[in-house]
Amino acid sequence: MTLSGCLIGSARRSCTVAVAVAVVFLLGRPASATTIYFQGWNTPGDTAGWVPDVANANVSVPAAGGNPGGYLDMTSGPTFQTVGGVANFAPVNGNYAAAGVDGVSFDLNEISGVFTQAAFRVRYQNSGFNGWYHPVTYAPAGGWQSFSISFDPTWSDAVAMANGWIADGPLLPGSQVNFATTMSNVFNPEIRLDGIGFALHAGLDNFALDARVSTVPEPASLLLVGTGVALAKIRRRKRNTPS
Image 1 (tube, rainbow, N blue to C red):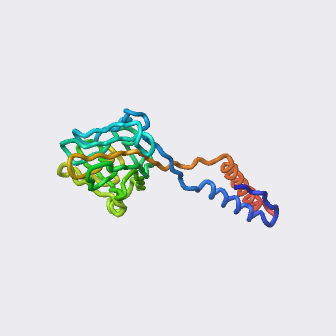
Image 2 (image 1 turned 120 degrees about the vertical axis):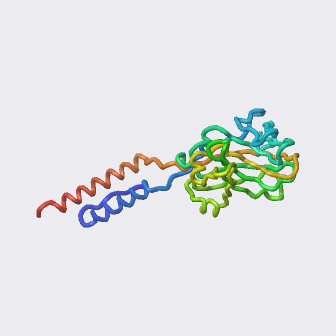
Image 3 (image 1 turned 60 degrees about the vertical axis):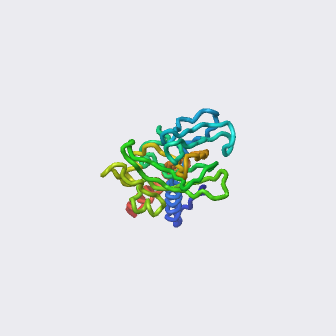
């Protein structure tokens, strides 16, 4: 934003107001979003720290077949009718509220098997707790499909549920944790696909975690702040000067 100049005399008040409005506009912009974690699995054989979400399942990274390039290839084992990937490291773990985390996105491909649900899931603190999950709808057309989930990590349970989140239920009696508390200490974020049978095969690609970042004032913005303060002081001094 550029101010071409200020008039002297009767228009001084209008100029002061204009500068003040400009300052509010520049410094009152909403926070922007940035991706604080991204994984596209483009190094064959390297799962980038992601592991299977249940015992006896498997994850691997082929060189091609993703969206595009490589991807996290996930297959079920003989124990659970579930397939998925889990990340247990920063910044995917931790305090989502403090970090400003407010969104997750990823691509899925249900390659083979009968699937009943796909979801993004987080647990609280450690393996002694369950958590919350947000289902996504995989279209019958198949192939790679993209999903995005936006949220506020400080939501109440009622607001979280109204926005599609579901509580897992307590792992042990008395261990159920509310949504905001869970998001303050996230453990083992997970992409989880449930199905029928033990021959489930799916792909995960382009996993991203987004966070709000405060806008840093540019030098021009700071100059306007100084100009606005100076004009306000001049106006006050002239008002207080005896005639």
